[in-house]
Image (cartoon, rainbow, N blue to C red; front, side):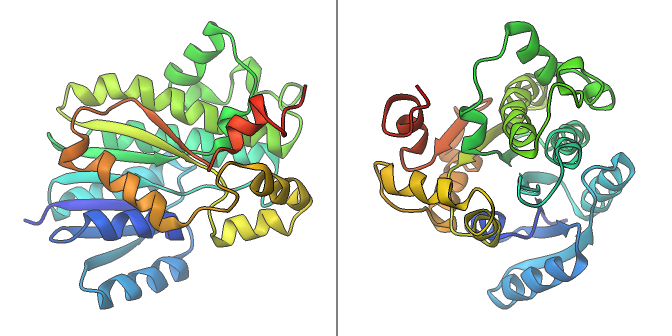
Length: 275
């Protein structure tokens, strides 16, 4: 049986990581939209990868569990790339919490039950999680360790506390990195690793939605005042993803890697500072 790598989310970043780590493995490419998955699979297949396609709704445990069973039937699951999500310009606060926060918790819970020894996973979070003010130790623990099915019932996530899509996105992405840290303990008992990358503005269709949306001016200013002075590329994220998921990253787990060209540094200590 082939070793199996699962890519959830057929976007540019997920594909860039998959290209670097999937040679010789069976890549299961899952997306909410079957057409997106099929289009990405065609490109990867023509590039020499063995690919099959699945439809998954990460906000449904039944759907995520079905994906796990389908992938496990093909062989040992040695890699999971979770790159699915919605942005503040695409969805309501409630939808963002359900997809980006709860959905990530589901993926980590379900795949953490089957990941092979020596395997690894990578969750794509966001620089936005680094711009949320500090939470209390109790809130951090709640986001990190509350079971997926109880997660959205937390008082800190209720509509009177999370009032707009950007706040929902920020707390979801902070929650992703916290949960990965906690899950690294459980995954470690199986001999597996899990990390997050928090990209900044990477040139993807989702980023273009943001740049042309109501917060577009703010995003363009982020690029202008950042140390890098430009947006990033999916291939740059893919390079770090390959390190984290491959043997050279064997000592790295439970960690979050901020890749934003210096935007967060400028936010807290530079020209973007709110103070």
